[in-house]
Image (cartoon, rainbow, N blue to C red; front, side):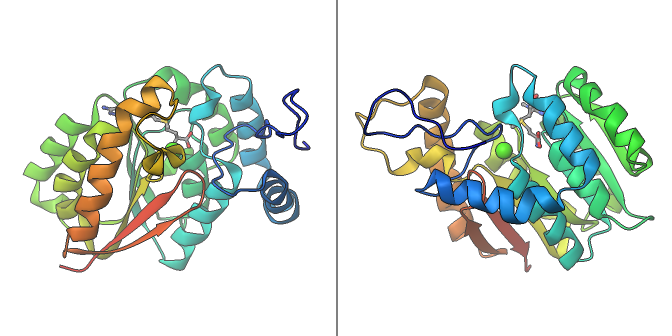
Length: 248
Ligand code: SAM
Ligand code: CA
């Protein structure tokens, strides 16, 4: 889909790609990345799930195709076997994860408060032949993580954890996940550039939810930068993803 014009002569609008979260200044360049490097290599089930999700009213929440490709590559690079995902929605990032895992790999826990949306993607995940790798659980993440923490066998057991849920809880998740991820493993926190709003002036006209969560994301970014238990790398992929590699 080409960049669209919003009606004013001078300002081209952000293009209408579903899951459009790019922070690139040029929509044309983002479109170029999608059309040249992402869509031609997107596995058929991911394309199908992206198209089904596009019809859902909350499609803004989905992981973008370029970020899906990034996650898939990252998991293969680190030879991830045991993973966790907090915030599934219809399952685009989950499917990109499950497709990257080896046959004996597992998304030990895929967690969301809403199972209905996951069920939109589930038939496609089943058709892709990777549903057996996924243990989906419906419910709020925090109490479940507290349960897991009580069981020593989960400590240091995850190669990769993707966090893409309620931003006001990311620091609460981090306190627990740091014990669950193994040393050398990676936690990926999504949306850490929060629509570019982090550097917006105080009087900038921000959507209500963007303004509400902004302070939590600012606090998270500061805390991760100061946390010596992890090495970090914040990438402007999608809406920003911060990779934390546990070192102690
Ligand atoms: N990773 C998903 C994808 O690729 O489409 C997008 C996730 S969406 C941005 C955020 C999800 O977090 C929503 O589906 C929402 O129901 C879920 N969520 C919100 N609060 C939660 C909580 N406390 N525990 C678990 N999931 C939660
Ligand atoms: Ca996200």
